[in-house]
Each structure stands twice: as structure tokens, then as C-alpha cells.
Length: 275
Image (tube, rainbow, N blue to C red):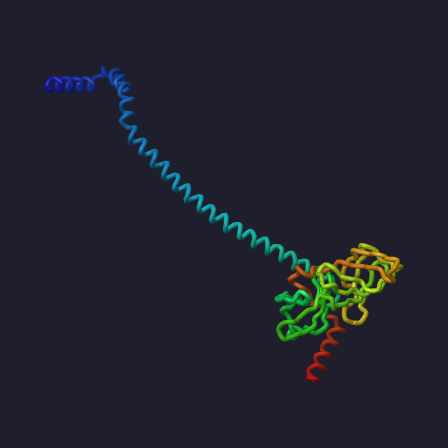
């Protein structure tokens, strides 16, 4: 041991004061490199396994966060799509209001009659807003119906598709005057007592004629979809698709014409005195 210690001291002195052992040191480092790597292998493996496990945990956590964010974004996207669709409907409704010569107010449907045989809806406007019995109701596409009962804060509307409802109409192309009656289906109207020789064809637009004083002139009512002539019958079978989206519209227009407004006020006054 003393000899080895002496040799070590001599080699240390020679290495410190001269560069004679640099090549020897380089050769020994090459020989010792595999030994160092083998000795460090357990520690390196442990660190690698730890990194993999922590990476997997963090990745799972990140994936969970991203899934939550995706779910929230999808919900917001669906809400945005619904709002965009509603804004488009309101824009169409306001565009239709701007085209009308009569005064109008916008109302919203707040209820539907559950009886399948009655096509009635409830709107959020009432007598405090000037609504009166017999007042026409439209959506962005055409005539929907008329007010049949009012209270202070809401009103009940009978749709044109109800089997008890009739509308005086005329064919826009030929000015032929007819009566459109509800069929109990929201997608179909029936034209009453149409002569076999009448000038009417599929695709004709039906508008309100204004006869009877209930509905103003010129509002779209429907489009003719079926014309069937039978020799054994005096009248043709004519059916039309309503222009209004009777089962889909949520925001609607209440129409105020001066004549109808005065008539409604007179009617309210007579009801009040009679009650």
C-alpha cells in the first residue's frame, strides 16, 4: 500500500508539473467509459421510467382538460347557432315589417293549445299593448291567423290551419276570388267551391283579398299545390301550402290598420258596456 501510495504521489506530481501523462489519461478515460455507463445505467433507467410515468399522467390530465374544454366549446357553439338562427328569423321578421304599410308590433309565442283538434297559440301581447279581437297575425312569410280572445297581458290566436277558420283570398295571377279553409293540418289549406273552369293552377300565389273586413288586402296566405278536376263533381279539388310557418314561427307580427283598430276599440267598448 505504501508503494502504491508512493507511485500515486509520483504520478500526481508528474501530471501536475508536466504533460507527459495526458495521452495515458485519455486512453484510460476511453477504457473507463463503458464502466461509467454501466454504473450509471440503473439511475438513468429509473429517471427515464419516472419521466415516462409523469409524462403519461400529465398527458392524461391534459387530455381530460381538453375534453372538458371541447365539451364547453361545443355547447357554446350550439348556443351560438341557436342565437344566430333566432337573429336571422328576427331580421326576416323586421324586414317584412318594414315592407308593410300598416303599423305592427312584434310578439312572441308563449303557449300552444295541447288539443290536436284546435290550432291555437298564445302570444305575450294583450290589451295593454292595443291588441284586439280579430287582429291579424303574421310571421316573416305570410298570414298566420287572427286574435280570438284577449287579456291584459296576452292574447289567444286562431291559426288559419284550424278547421273552423276561413280566409277570403284571391289568386295573385288571375285575381280569382276564393275562400281558403283550414284542414286541421298545418301544411295544408283547402280552397272551397272552385269551379272546374276556374283559372287556377299549381304554383299560384294566394293573397288575402280584404273582403269581409277581417284581414287587410295583399298579405300572402299560401301557394297552390294541388288542382284536381273530376268530371263527376261540380267543383275542383284545390289544396294549398300555407305561406306562414305555422308550426315553427316563434316571433310574429300583430298588424294595426286604422280601420281595424277603430273597430276593435268599438268592439271592446260594446263588450265592456254589455258586461
